[in-house]
Length: 375
Image (spheres, rainbow, N blue to C red):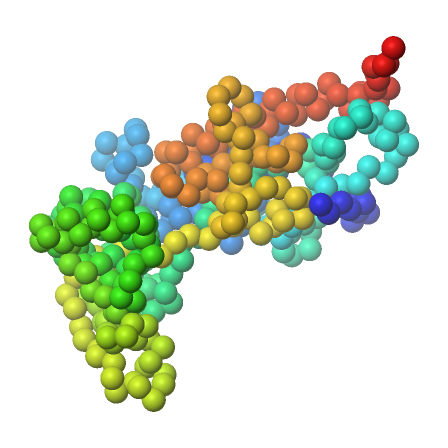
């Protein structure tokens, strides 16, 4: 675990820093500001999170006519500011513990008390802040392919969330790209809306569990899903005004056709256009948690934060006192705006409890710790 001494060039100390300005971060900011915790929100390199890529949000409660993703995020940001939250553009580069340097701090530390007071938060531009608590709400970035048409059509027929956007493409031919559990689950879900779902996978064999493969094969037999093996997407055609019109695919019987395009075997690769009305990527997400590695906070193999969960308070707490997780940095399953908001409110409440306890601790009051005798 990394610890660092207090910097002389600290820009500002804050009671609470929130990393991320998506639904989880902004909900946490609203609750934290209403609790007088003076939250400072850093927007990150994707201000507003993944919801800003969604042109129409129809499943967020309270908007019977729907609302655009950017508008929802803007409204929540203004609401947080109204209660006193401060939102700044900044990318959090690292979070570390500040080393206790004073004799008073050392004397006031209870035996076994390893809680950080405070955290050092460094931004990508070099600015340094300190904070008594941190809420990690920096989300997870959907993996993309980097093919032509992708940037222009994201949110206009290209999506990374079937639950969010599937209903917009009723009776359309829908293509799902991927070969793992997520791709199978998305493909099965989209059969509720599509005339046909086409599952594109670059290999012959799938990485998904047998459960999802079996369910998908049942849909194949029913004519609801068609599988396109050893096939890859190379371009998406269309416009923001008209949406996705068709895609360009490449295929090779031995799989991974893109790799062969740049080899002596390029002439063996079949290239063809295919008409679809929507494309869904299901090739995974990368949680934005690398900046927390210096804290020693526990993560799973994919980088998602492990929180305590369970019942009662403290559900969003990590194993490092003072660090809390909310939204897609924790949740790799639901990944919905409403669940992110719920976790954001929990994280703010948990952080408030932690900060109140911190104020009453011997470190904060300067009182000597009482050590129980063995007598």
